Length: 341
Image 1: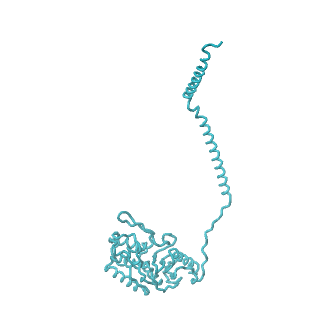
Image 2: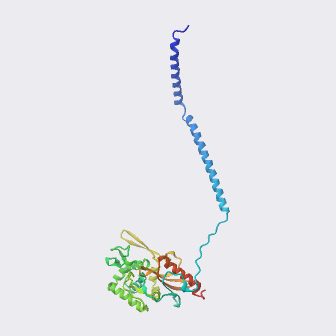
Image 3: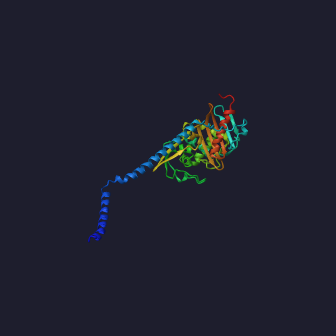
């Protein structure tokens, strides 16, 4: 016989049992430490890190083994490319310059010549005479000059970092004219000469005649005019005269100079790559370029114990004018003096 409350109580107990189970589970979850559930995740992450570390160690061992293999292998010796042998005949020298002239400064012996009497535009080689006139004029070198609109190039429209209004001393202008071929500086030197530019240019031509530069003519102090003309032979005479002036030697061979101006400074470098490279023994130099003259180079240098003057006119580029000098220097060492020690 069934108890009168039996049928009704079982569903209630099941409901009550389910409710207590859920509550008990929730209570256990709430009271359990977080590490209980984080442990499996940590273990998994630790295993991954360990596997990654092992893989990294294997990769390092392989790389080290490769390094040891490379180190054990014989090293390839890379030899510097030797310059091409030069012909004994100077007429066959591979020069880009159409004019070249090299003399011994002491004996005046001509070691190399090519079209040395040909009169050509000389571009900024002009500035070597400009420097000579300024040096010999005895004007105060520390006198302040100002760049004006008259110093701006209206012939070739060449650029300059010396803005109109820039203040600098005569000494600084001479330095920049000789070292960096600064046109406005050179023109300012002539403009502030007693009598101005016309008197300065006249002094340039008078000095040329005094030195015996009979193939030379100047019309401006910068060399921007193609009417400034000379021969390599005459320019060697000018170089020998300029070399006797210590200030011209110093400024023309200065590697660089920093000019203080309002609001900062201007950094200039020597226009001659041979000076910047520092591998030649150079006592005086000047570079030049206008389209009518080509790339020009004048340098006083010492080769195998001899003081030499080299002049190159109408080379193709800045690189080839230096290469021409290097070529002639190698040729002189090989063939230019059979008695050299």
